[in-house]
Structures are given as C-alpha cells and as structure tokens.
Length: 261
Ligand code: THG
Image 1 (spheres, protein in one colour):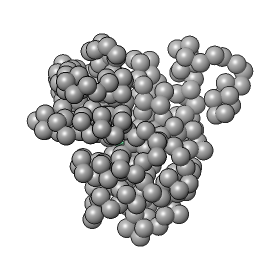
Image 2 (spheres, protein in one colour; image 1 turned 30 degrees about the horizontal axis):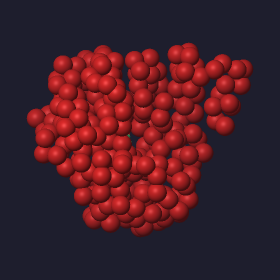
Image 3 (cartoon, protein in one colour; image 1 turned 30 degrees about the vertical axis):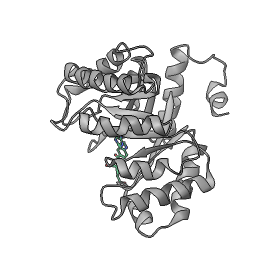
C-alpha cells in the first residue's frame, strides 16, 4: 500500500504557523521525519487560511524538494494552486483532487494528463457528501468516464470514497468499505483507491485505535493508498502486517524491519 504522509497540512496549527513565518526548516523537518518513518509520498496542503495559496504551494514544494526526493500529492480544492506545484515537481506527482463535477473534471483530468500526474477523484459533487455506496459508485462512474474520454490511464486514477468521522456518520463506514471493493470493478485497467484515514477519528477520544482498525479493514477490502500519519508506528506496523496476511509480501521473522529497508 502507498503511504501518503498527511503532516504537511496548514490545518495543523504548528504547520500553519510555519507557513506564515515561511519557516523552511520546520517544514523540511516534517518532510524528513515522514520519509524516515516510511512514507512513500507526502501530501502538501497549504491549509484553509493561507493568504496567497499559490505562493505557499510553490514555497512548500521547493522547500520539501531541497531535502527529500519523494513524490508529492498536491492537495488543494483550487486547480490553479495545484498547477503551481505541478510546474516544479521533480517526481511524478499526484493531484489531490478533483471531485465528480464536470466543471472540475474538465480542468483537472486534462491537467493530470498534461503533467503525467496521477489523480485522486473524490466520489462526491457539489450537491454534497455521498449518502451510500450507490451514490459513491455513480460519482466514480462519472469520473472514470471522463478519464476514458480524455485518454487518461485509469490505473493512474485513485478513487476516494470520502471517509467520514465515525462519531457523526457511523452508518457510512460499511458504505465506504464496500465502495473500496466496488470501485475496482468499474473499468479495465482497474482504478486504484485512496482514503484520508484521519478523517475517521476526528473529534473522537480513541484516534489511533480508530485509525488503525479502519485502515486494516480498508486494506482487507483492497485499498491501494492512504493519506495518514506515518509517525504513528503502531499504524504503520498494522498496515505492513495486514499486507503480509494478504500474502502481498513474503513472511520472515523480521518482516517489520525488512519492510523498513
Ligand atoms: N481525501 C483526500 N485528501 C484529503 C483528505 C481526504 N486531504 C486532507 C485530509 N482528508 C487528510 N489529511 C488529514 C490531516 C489531518 C487531519 C485529518 C486529515 C487531522 N488533523 C487534526 C484535527 O483536525 O484534529 C489537526 C490537529 C492540530 O491542529 O494539530 O485530524 O479525505 N483525497
């Protein structure tokens, strides 16, 4: 499974402060820590309150690339902010994200193709959060159709069922897990799947436990990637072990250490 480190996000107070002060060292430390902990890719989100999000995205990407060469997931609701990052990334990037609205798809699918980036497709539209697996599948089908029209390879598409907090949307858990299974049947080559894992535990009292259990269940449903906290070692170990049990890696007594290398 692809581990996308979630920690470079202006939503975190310390990161928001570092962005405002243009404290490059603070951002670079987070990037190094995430990679050292086993992240394969880093999510880069300016946060909701950045004054000049295009400028912040450029600064974040430049700062991170000075110290690590991991690929980046450019996380913004604004296409022009994402494109600012795409122009300067050194590795194949991920666009995070488009939703299923045609107005967004018409911009972001060609952008993903132009820059040879992978693309996250949120299975929601401006009509609101999806209510069940059927609504998620309808949105997913719309996203897949657009990719096929544009000639964007669906194996570079990551469908996101939108993980919701278990404390306010408890009935959605099973809908989300079943969606992960169903998305893969939509087309050939099969689209991939991704979740924003920490959404699941927001404002709960058992965040690590909920994140860990959610991730293992999603991996069992075939999850391809998760935006998550790579510094949570129990979480990382659980993911590695889940993939071992699914026979995706070969068992050895030191499988946790082996995975780190
Ligand atoms: N799908 C996609 N992208 C996403 C999400 C998604 N990007 C953003 C988000 N969801 C995933 N990343 C996070 C990052 C942090 C938190 C949750 C999801 C988080 N932050 C603390 C909180 O809100 O409690 C911040 C606490 C602090 O201020 O220190 O939980 O679903 N494609």
